[in-house]
Length: 112
Length: 113
Image (cartoon, rainbow over all chains, first blue to last red; front, side, top):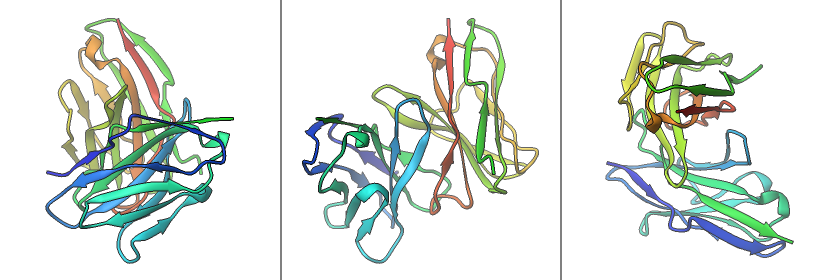
């Protein structure tokens, strides 16, 4: 069965600093990987996705993620964060069945 | 397009009451799903549907029923509410199953007392 682990429940960072949010997955088959963002009191929206091809995926708002098959990881990065990036970030995995499985989320708090 | 809409936004129920959370999408998506979000647990899949007339269970289906009579609508029914069902519920839709972007509704915050 597929699963997703987000090791950091909270990540505090100062504005303009780089950030990495970690995501590891387990699956016995090929996977599709996603990062979603949830701003306070809102639904989720897609940041980026990996389906196939280049392992470096660029998304909206300057975020990018790298698919590493050998380490079963899909970490999210941004070289310089803004206050407006404060939100909860969810990693998710699908093995092209009918289910998208989410991690427990990482709350990114950006301080001025 | 309105996207994915959910009603109501907020609801308070007493233990044992029943209710239906409504979800509709106007994007002609075949795939729809219901999640619940609880602190520290992320989103957990309750039920999903790959098309009209077809539904299946997710990770946490107990206490919930769904039906899919049309492509647009996917209501979630709580037959006898319990305090453990206090949560935020999200409906989502997608053009296809796991490989395409899922579009989420704004959520319904349910409290069961």
